[in-house]
Image 1 (cartoon, rainbow, N blue to C red):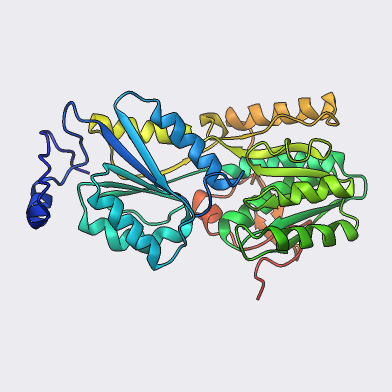
Image 2: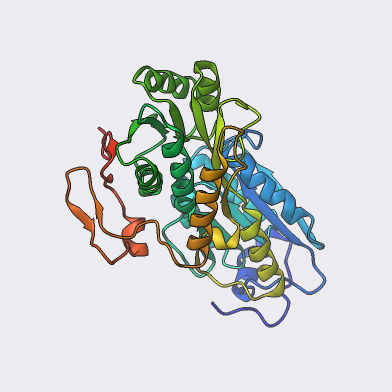
Length: 364
């Protein structure tokens, strides 16, 4: 992407806005001007999960000298998102972070109209000159939590409460199951779908049902701590997501796959400030710090902790890959051959479950 070599002069008169866009094509910021970054959340910034993790990243960015931030929360993934994006664009934001996959259609309606503004889409699959994507290899962290879950399960039944059957979610379940089966080869991961990112009542109902099926560890791809609360109430263990959820279930907590979005947000904002930003697909892993696992619960033994620490370091060093073959699907078909590993393209399109998962990757 071409970057402006000279400052863009903003024309505040809306009647001249279209003309000004013809001259302000790059994503550089005028010298001496503060950067304004906007964030759009699909749920409350205090949801104790996905959006709160993003907001912690925003708060870190706010501490950078010359950066101002604001956010809007609980924005549904429909036509309303387009209105919010448009409002931010005309409110002199230099960069807008859209933090949910479902905002993609709205972004590509709005971004072409404001080519001098940077749009960053979390989990997106499409780019443009002023639209970049970002995510983290959270499946690496999920694999590590699977090692813990498999090691701690006594019944060999681990429940997994999942949001939507998207490649991101399926990939995470598979990585988790690979970890579970590495530690406990006879264990199975029972998956049940909520069909929502955040539906606490349904999450609780499914979690109770899984415990009734003899699951003694509960894991999740949900944005609330509801599953953690059920685990504590029913006397089983739990694996959290998005953030350290131990405060909600201190007796049940084993660990969690967590996000530290500031690792990406700080880099992107500084690039925009320097005028060096360019559209790209960011997909960083454990080595960057954007994904990690939460501190262990007190019942996790030193032996298990050491095993996880070793695997984590091997992944960071490039000596271990979660999706190294042979990997079989539920029907025993080889999906990843021996002595090979899944490509990023294959990971991003993953729509099948590995051997060891009980449930369907394509529910009606």
